[in-house]
Image (cartoon, rainbow, N blue to C red; front, side, top):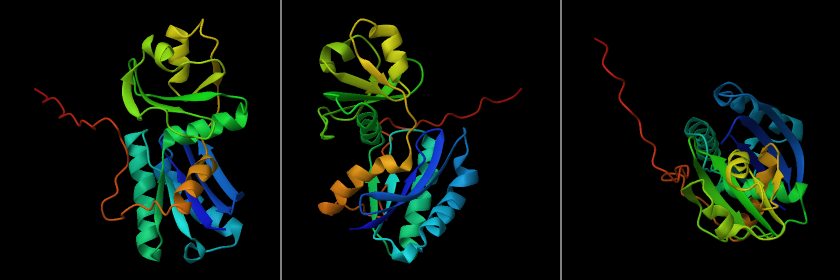
Length: 226
């Protein structure tokens, strides 16, 4: 069974873990805004030390590839790619939305469907919809939170998860009977998809891989000061 280093930095939680087969043998995290540049690299060193291995012992590096925070994703992906280049290891990128669904299914194993929503400010969000086997029922997308979500995706036993779930349910889902799974996303939640991708050798091209922002990133020019 493969040994993975897992890195998750798409939101406020900064997390790294080591897995051997299906078991997490070391994990370290902190939930603090803008903490990735401060802690992530040291957390990687720490979990490798805790697991008693070096980067050269890994079969692959796994990273949360988005969507999510632009800065957090850049830091996590840059670190993961640097480790892979230096040690000649493959990179596996996992969906943040699918990882949220995996975390929700751990908490609510009876869920018939998981609706993952990552808040993108205002009334916008990143959306993923998954079966209990983590199969996607819709393309991951950038959407406006409205009543169509319930009409299009809710069924009995559906669970909503992610930073955009509360906003949706507060405004549009009060009477839908949807369960909200409130949780923190950690690196170990990437493990299920990482194994699925490893089994089919779905490996990223290190030279060209970029995080999946879904929505284009717009950088505005500062206004001139007069």
